[in-house]
Length: 159
Image (tube, rainbow, N blue to C red; front, side, top):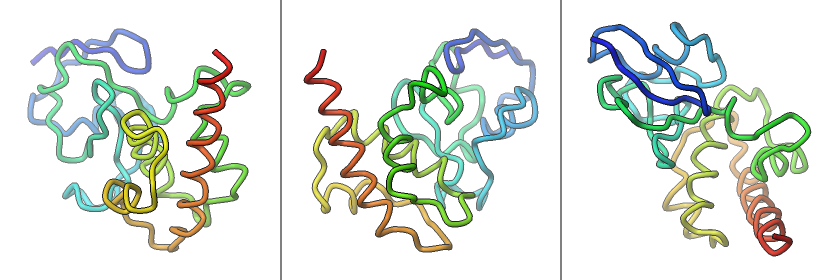
């Protein structure tokens, strides 16, 4: 089956079984290794990316459903290394990662949240960021999410 979609701003066509999880297309066919495999059951969130701006757990999302859609991975979250996304900048400022394996999924989930809720409360964060971190960096992530909202809101005011 041929699937046409946009990933990180680039048009792609892949030919594979339509039931192949998007995660494996992203990692193995398109060679974008930032999106991680965690559980394979859409429970941990390590594989989170965006489809048309919505956070999706790609390990259980069949590739056939991305036909004609826009996919964004952690590699496409910012437009350059010099111009980081507010979430990426906040993660650096707050020194969030410990091992770092799950962090791309957390950053993608956070970016999707901030697009819907520009100034999230702790309750908003608890209800929306439900990924799992074995290193338990949740406290630093919460600080980074609030910092990312501040950065993003300041950038919006400057425009």
